[in-house]
Length: 246
Image 1 (cartoon, rainbow, N blue to C red):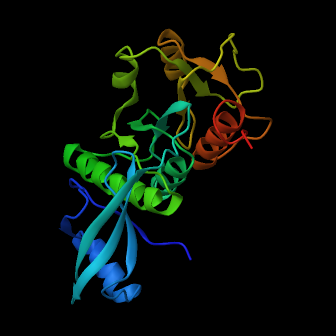
Image 2: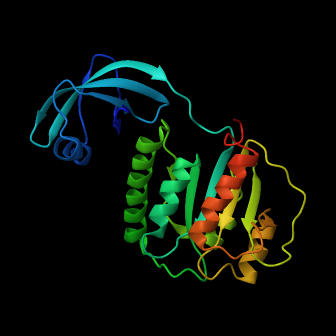
Image 3: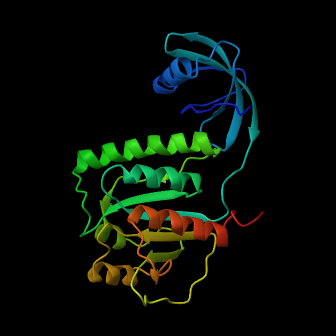
């Protein structure tokens, strides 16, 4: 039987006792009906997994004793950054969840000219916090012990105007019948841009070109924004990452 995995945003040392986050504790106590003595797996994002044993359950409060730690590296050798135009509704939740499961290292939400979603500063910060919680849940489910970085949403043009801090192969999806495909090779760091519901404007595609992005497409069919993101990540991980290693 697979043990419940729990993210705890604090230092975890063998022999210490920690209180689980309120929402997580409530789920474990009321939904999973955990009891004292039940085993858990704890992680805090530093790459380790630690054995945990529930010491007490009082109402919706759960206290856990931290046991032995072990390294469990489940990160892809391909460091993928997903530059994602925010789709409407809860579709970005889906993108964040599945991208995390597929091993993406960094998610940069952006708003483009044709984006349906519009966010002010407060809304953008709140969205980023919400998506980080979605990513934590995806890490708990998938076995990842490191969290992806999720930025606060920003304007696409603002992002493209700033050179990347580290060298990387840069790609942008373009569903047109004959996108410009320059020679490129995937290395240990790769970035891929995915457009909004209405696609990128010609001016935005030109900005991508100036920023060093190569235009590629995933086949003859036009995919929804959230479908394109997941299809692109599966393609990259299968060809250059760890999904094709077995």
